[in-house]
Length: 152
Image (tube, rainbow, N blue to C red):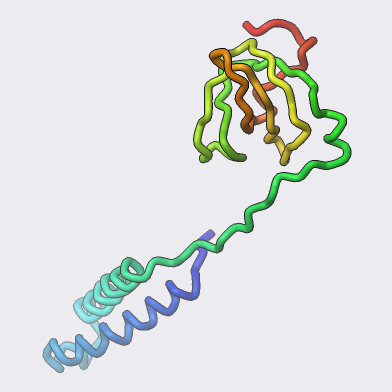
């Protein structure tokens, strides 16, 4: 599905008007007496080029996503302090999401403890890495209950 913003629609409309004005000023009048491929090419390519320039100079801003704060739900409070085993090497993140910076890599088989704070599949956990206790965010998909067996 094509997503058109108001900026892109306005850019094409402005580009079409500018192209028609430039074409009338810079090309011979007999080019425009009859519709032909040359006239269509001048209008089409000119509109495309000018609209591209406008959009490049004034990039559309993505709608700002409201930062959803991590919430501690009463149902999750009972999960605080539970231990889980890391299924495979785990990237411990500074915030929710894979775009967040990596704090540490927790090796497979390491036990982590939940803080009880979570948002969707992302849980805040504590782990001991290289002798230091590190707290960060982890996808729960990489965690297994402590009694599920050893890592492969």
